[in-house]
Length: 346
Image (cartoon, rainbow, N blue to C red; front, side):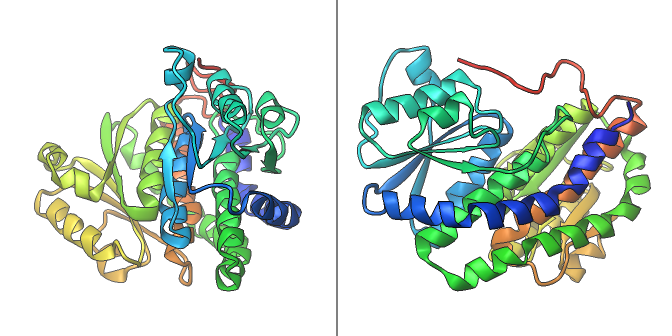
């Protein structure tokens, strides 16, 4: 195999998001009405790719819905046998398979404490879905490639849909409805990039940097590069990167930066300036022409994409980057060594 399954699933994402938004809109509206007034903050249990989706939720629900979002520490329950108070929490579990026992344990504890619980999963018959009071189904279909792609962006879209109903915001819902078209444009525009990515076939490490909404994107792209190409890819917030890790940047050090227009752009422009000074090998995902002109590999984001939705668009060339690296390194992108599709942790 040479990544045909993974590439096909990457390109299925616009259709998956379109299906999810249509199929789950009324269900999410009912969920929001059922839980409204019953919680003051959100507690999310997730692992791996789903944990990166939870990072997106921290920013989106904090900015648009003024909600504090905490990430659960499942081993407190499963390994240490302690049960932290979940008073006034909406307890959410995110898992594409819905199989991981530690995520299930957090939702079961939430129900024991009589808290509202919500599962975001691709399998509505999974143990996680059965443990939850409410379920948002991802509608991604069977994901055959081991590395998650369409279930990741579907998880982000489910969180985005939840946010629009929590705020009852027509403007944001209209922006969300236009998202599949923006994702399709990004995939079409990225098709010519695959050969250019092959220049990095011999790299052993890289930094992946984002901030704000795209802090999650940095983590997810870095994860894909690790999973698919066995490259040590380290994700950072641009703010954290300046607090020490920038010292590793020397001439030719690869740095992938996600820098869309919005509240974080000025900060990221400053960081890119530092990277240029230190002669980093710059891969840039942005819609800012002033930045793209400095990149060794510029990746143009579609115009008209609001910042809060850029994580669903900017991650797509990152997925293709991982795919191209794996192919160039003669690895199997569909079945990365040492990984299985469902990982169960306690």
